[in-house]
Length: 390
Image (tube, rainbow, N blue to C red):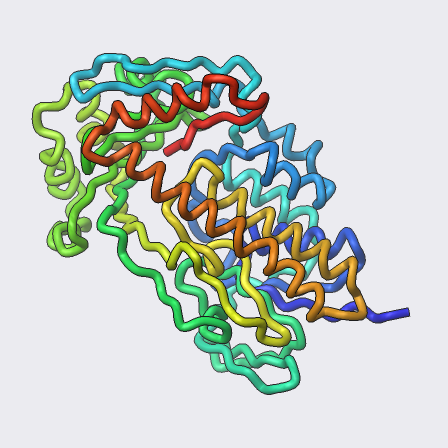
């Protein structure tokens, strides 16, 4: 009987944890190294819509569908599009047929963590560099100077992956657009007008080069995403340590918009956080290098798409795990099989993200997005919800 190769995974995001769980289901040992000091070291982001054709397939492979269903927040698939004057241009309620139920990212990550044997994830291991040792083996050096050697290394470490250089010289490049995040807390009591504006799920208020997006989360929280197409220097000139001044500066980019929309920025209860949008080349791929591969943003960082980056990362992890389980005596064949499917899928999703970004923030926004919605609503297959989400 072939002894399964121990898999070393860098990064405890949803993709890396899904891979570790699918490997565990198939009896393959894995260790996940994560830079964060603990699972609660930082906020894990907001809502995720988990798609029937990728994220849910990954959770099925991980044998976690029942746990996932227990996290679903009903009604959050509704979508509302407003004009800059506050006019409602599109208002689709959540009728339960969207096929992309919403959950809190942090809660889904906790389900994945709890499904793994104790000690699988090792916290506080920030990778400083990686190098090839030959014969399919690699060395990983951590910030504290410690090292490990592995015969199978998977980079699930996101946009600025330290594993990617073993395979590719590609590096993320700024897209020309950044997102600024804020929150309105205890919104039902403290911000009832904002709750009315956002509705029960997602809000999109768009114009060429800019937009105010929001999502109603669990516990009376409104998560606000402000998108602006500006040079990175425009943002770095803002002092984000001065929350009030930074918020006011961002809000001025929306002068003339309806006050109920700009209030989503100016009434924020948290300091604004800058998140520049970076991407890898749409057709990013590499030649097979023995003993190493990538999943998720490490492999195919792209603009947000209707497919959803977290969903694709989870599907990458699930498919890689199943490929390794199916070929326990031929790891290289398993990695090749995984990459040959992943490359075209991720390229299509990246192209779709660029197209969706143009619909949302191009010269004809928001009408281009409304046309996109209308085209998908006409005879789209059951469960294929076009909602891009914030």
